[in-house]
Image 1 (cartoon, helix red, strand yellow):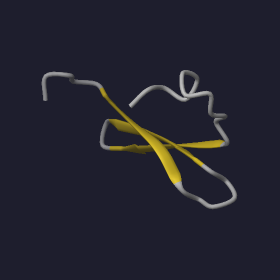
Image 2 (spheres, one colour):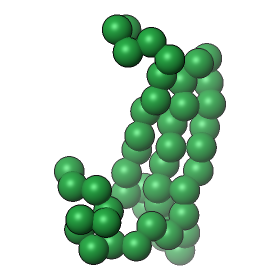
Image 3 (cartoon, rainbow, N blue to C red):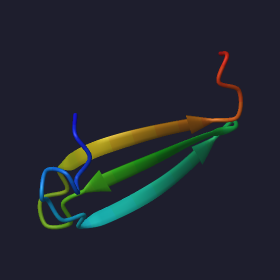
Length: 47
């Protein structure tokens, strides 16, 4: 999936969720609440 910038789409809204050492960034349409992208970040890339 190409990044939003490469697809010429605007990032409407984003939210950050943190749980047990993981971070999830969700980008979504504020009007419809439809999630367009999820990014999962963790501290240990080997797991």
